Length: 116
View: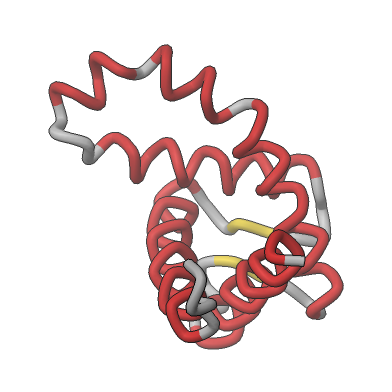
């Protein structure tokens, strides 16, 4: 249940960013945002650990700032896999990934369970 709630919050983050900043990403419905959230979760579970391991020296040299680029790349990959979810460019993917991460973490804090 907790995983499903986090997916809904991530989809909400996608939807909010696409609504207020249509020059970054384009999502036509909440269903599209939810499918993109599922895809991003799968990519983050399987591909991201490999990318993190391969880019460790770069992340150390940039004091972690390369993580923003990696997050943008994961978002761009979702856009390449799922054509209804559109990221409008490389820099837009990095900015959108940062904004979605920020909004999702805020929403997660709002629904945080007392057990957490």
